[in-house]
Image (tube, rainbow, N blue to C red):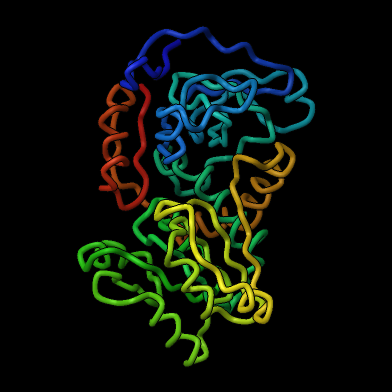
Length: 327
């Protein structure tokens, strides 16, 4: 089969690799679409190696058709040849086929294309993990989701709204604010014109203080924002794109009972990932079927144009997910 490989100069090529050998608990999936994630860029740069036992090539989420079912997978699950599935991978999605353990597979939701389904597993699992497991968010709570135009925000914002959560998000320009209107955030802060710290202070004064923050930026502004959360709030760090350091008033943290939580999906055990995927199918799939929650697709390209697809993420041009299709 073929897969996208990384050359010594970090360029990409579509080349031959060994065919996967189906394990007893695996299903072999013929890939039809694979979605991009920032972790792919990090892996390409040598900063995010795949977990042991995973293929060397990139790709964390796919959609496709089961073409073979391992002996134990057949006993432990209801998967069969011909099932349309999407899957969360440790790596190896930029290819024609992938071996997937049976409990890392989910059925393609009703009213969902294969391109949309490929954009679901990593982003939706990350959203569910941080909203409901780490954030313990409840209907009526207020969420702060930084970087409202990011691929993850395009999932977290509508998912939170579908479960009755009020959402504040940030963007860099008026144009970007216009481009994410369809996400229906309650408050969109254009940081080119407004100070997010002042906005949070005003929200606190008006009784709309933040209960949960999901932060992929970090940096100096994080420490300033922590002053204006509700008592017992959770600030969940998932990345530090604006910088790895901030200054925190520790007195404010313990007086307001604020919890700062570091969270990544990739570091979770396979068992916990399987539990998250099962929860997604139970709790979120009905809302995907009705259109309340849908992945936002920015662009679709053939897998042979993976380099061009990566360039979109490198330049930060996308509002939503970039997806590669496999013939």
